[in-house]
Image (cartoon, rainbow, N blue to C red):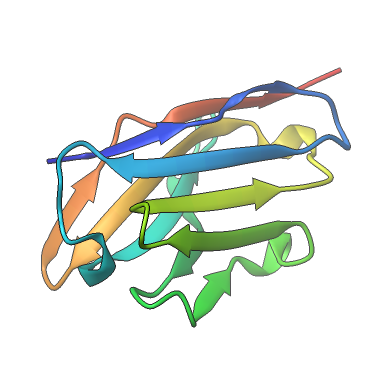
Length: 116
């Protein structure tokens, strides 16, 4: 079992991207708290945003609160990360994590590159 991220790519500064994340197998998606992490080149992986299983509580890194929205669709077993006003420092590999109790599932990530 793993998460499957998509939606990354090359974007210009000031642009937008919407990342999507699903699961590799059929699971009870609504059991999982979901989160997005980012790993920039040469840096440690950091939390970008998280959303609880019901979708009614979210947390976004302070440095990105005004530019990023996390949401989920439990019916379609997907979680999304909407990123606006992208900056070069947003460049990195974005990973989606599914967490249920002590169990965590990660994916291979999707590359986001912000450059003119």
